[in-house]
Image (tube, rainbow, N blue to C red; front, side, top):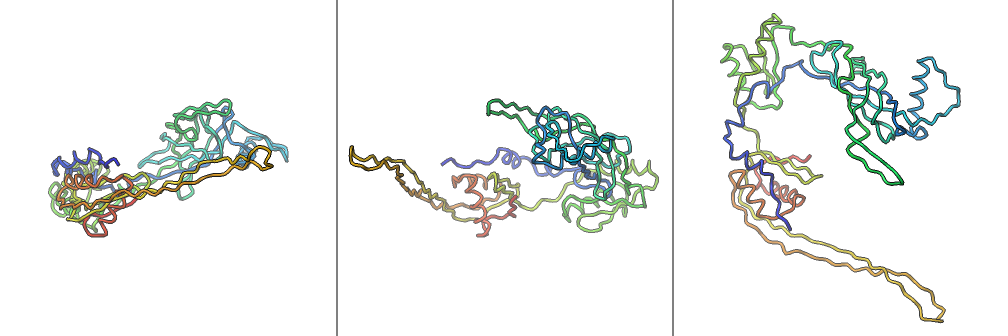
Length: 368
């Protein structure tokens, strides 16, 4: 059994000084209330595919969309007609409307197939309205898709490189409506931390007041800071530019271990420690093998040939060892102690959970 080894990046992080890791700008830790992006979504069709579009018998909404589109363009499809379109695909179009986006500004869009199209490569998205959560139209998208993949099929054999059912259109949407921003309104701006931490908030307030004067920044709670800012738009922009580049030393994060149960990945920060404990690790393997046998009757016996199977079940139990794990005050010691167990990544997930339950792992477990 191969021992589990952590990524070398963890060891590098331990050797770096803490102050070098924790020195951040305010803009790296906090955002300005009201300065945010908004998600847009729309439904459209992609045309011009090389026979790789939706199978219309299985995706009736594609036919409905085409009939409605042609009707708006003055083309009436005879009732009862069921065209077999192979060059059309129904898609969902998504985009992110950045803060302060103005009408006429281009933004990127992502186009994803929602039917059973084999590929969107070479297709063109027809005019699609993109709406926000309030149902209003904020952008209109159209253009040729860029699909970073390729595929080929012949004689029942197919080969695909990358993903072919989604693509992007750089600058494929035009902003039609601006989202108002409250940054230029009132006498105050509000800074919001990405994570609630009272130590970091206290240092942010101290740094801002030290740079601009006492009373400029006041705490609202453990996540938000109120900052008095100039009312004039030009002065406020210069003020925010200076404010967001102030450097602070953020507070120490809580010790945490992140475990991905699907891939077996384990990542822990440098504050994780271990108390003395004992760990026993062993494996139980059950193997079932089936061998086909043929029972052949003797000549002129009148019997029939019968096919049977012979199953063999084998149970193998590896010898488990009890390993004494001393106290580990640093991440280097934690990695060294866990490597001594010789567990696979999947087994390590269970070991860490058991150590947490026993009180030996001094960290918060988060399973993703």
